[in-house]
Image (cartoon, rainbow, N blue to C red; front, side, top):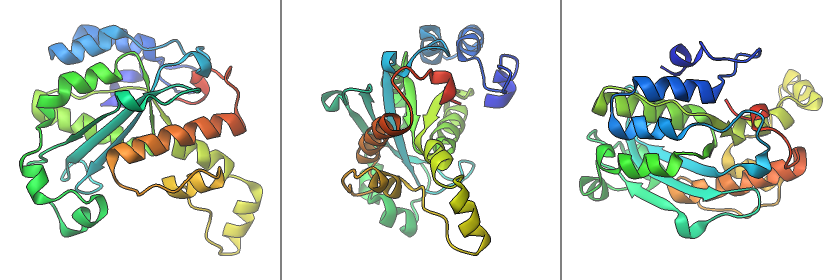
Length: 244
């Protein structure tokens, strides 16, 4: 588990010191692809955002509980603060080996026929880890991507995965739900502003995209992060202020 492995190497605020965590896991990992991934290392916490190689990551699932639900698609796209590299995007439909519910099909639009011919996570693992290696993942709600990938790998190769992630939902939470007037509004029973991906994008005047397609959501997350940095931070902000 992330917190058990990482807690030996944390800063004064409890945030894992990711380079040390990766050094430890590069030694202990048994799977050769996972070991190679950790051997690539993690960037130093003081690294400015302007110097980072980033990858927006999104997964779609059969539900919200990684113990009984599974991944049906993965989308990712490399980017930095200046560019989004659409030509290097990757997208996979997976066979979850678990039944699709009617509700999940309505949300992500992936059909039973598509997952029947989809990949197993084991098949895409080398490519997925290669795309993540040396980059900082940017996601919208880190609990989904990190927990589902961790559980899925434990089921298939007997060991999970940990990685630092910048969460655009958490960033937005700092500037929306924690604002004083939002707290007052909540006190009087008004609904707080949404921090769903589409609602967050609308606050930065970004265009509307059809939600719940892993690759489109990855692109939407990359654009949202660029806007958040332009509005609330600077390119010289260190990654330690944003990752978890």
